[in-house]
Length: 526
Image 1: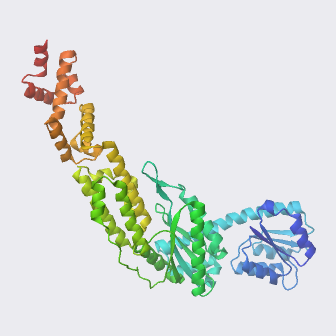
Image 2: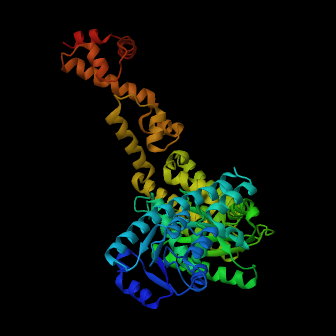
Image 3: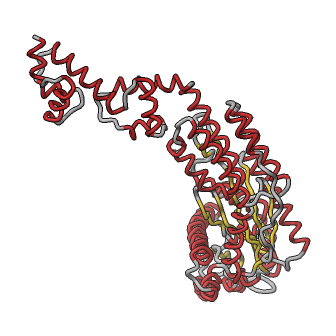
């Protein structure tokens, strides 16, 4: 925080600088002025958090200084220092919402306590104002439930500097904090989105400067995908120099995000835009981002008239990819797919349509390969990671790269676990042998093993000569015969134990298979 000391007496200024422990109060910078002319110059160039001022000074009083500040919307706390206990001064100071009226000579301990209270009240009021301003920007840009005229009128009360701005650079920021972890699940490197947003905003403030921080527009448009919309105010007319400066500053931000947070990112910047055009500029940026996801860690500078560029994309060698997959070269298949994306990026031809077409071709190869093995891809790929990547593919080629890694990892894992077709059959039969007394349908097995139900039937026919249904019946009735001869348990309990809660049905099925009822079978065995 910053404080401004204003007094025509240099000894008072020096006493204030030395007599107060400003660092302990959280004050990093102490500015001084000996009249209100210099004070006003400092207020224009610096964001001051607290004013301590004499009242009687050459070239205008401290009351005049505060009056002008209030007219300009500068609502920081002000503490007046004076030699005179004049009621009219005190009354005017109160009208201007000064925090305190303090008589000299200065008691530094008492003044320190007053400053602490003033800063605490200022911080609360500052936060309330910034929150209100941020909500107004959101409603105007995102929800569009305020007209331009209403928005300007309401915002000027909280942010008078709005009227002096020459336009805005509208910025859509994409952060890519996701990776695929060792469990092949999507891992977000920073789980606390609000805290991540604050870190990013502070970082942008440090590079874009005080005007950006004061405007306080940093709106999360998609928390899951980590997208933010922000505005950089233009204090001068927009020209090539401004364009170059914004591009340079943004590249610096990308480097900091890469190094400090370990994230990839991309910036889409539309300049210049008038305040009235900001909501439409947000839509334009969103469409451009979706249409031209490009590659990561880039700055895309566009204008209101810019259309999504089209460049001929490379050709995805499907035959080569299919051959790699069919011969079990999964890593080669992955590399061929990644190389396609890298080549498209190097040609600046990664559009939303290109990613969509590539996604379809990639899936067709995967799904056909799995179908030949009787594996239902729609069930193999059904977790949250799959759904997130599918949903956000068009936002960035970064997500398509993660999708390729995720898919190939799933294939590796499944094929390693299942092994050969013979191992698959053994695994399936063993599971049924261990659980045949439970109510498990073909569809349940399909969900567990990702096989097509008809493929499950073919496995049972091949391995047992029976359908799945008849195999389960045979296992249950064989166990029933064993229990009938080796135990004295009631027949209805045996029916339940082998998986039939309908005793009549169990009896009919048993007699149809063995020619006698369960009770008769027990009698004949004795």
